[in-house]
Length: 147
Image (cartoon, rainbow, N blue to C red; front, side, top):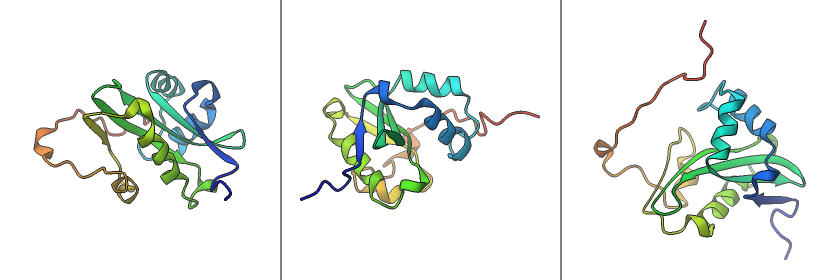
């Protein structure tokens, strides 16, 4: 039986990451990191456990987990480029993330999404049971250039 994504691969090798593609998507196309500076993208990658999705040798997707590898993880910056969507690659990427040995046994694994609840529900993510227990500091339009 053929591999469902024969020309695609997922890797955690940071040397393979194509920073310019990640930066372009996050700064120009994402709703959560619009206008993010390149240096912030680089620093976030350096300090996270990253997953790249590749079509042949071209990066077409990305996700990172901010984690201590023991008790907590936060899934961030998940994307598949438009030309490769609607093929099941997001689900395939999530399967890789959730099965990775370095991410097993986490007491809490969180994420925030505006529009992909259906994807994450398939992997056990649920709305926060007691949102009143959580607090945050959130700066809206943080990367938007000021006039």
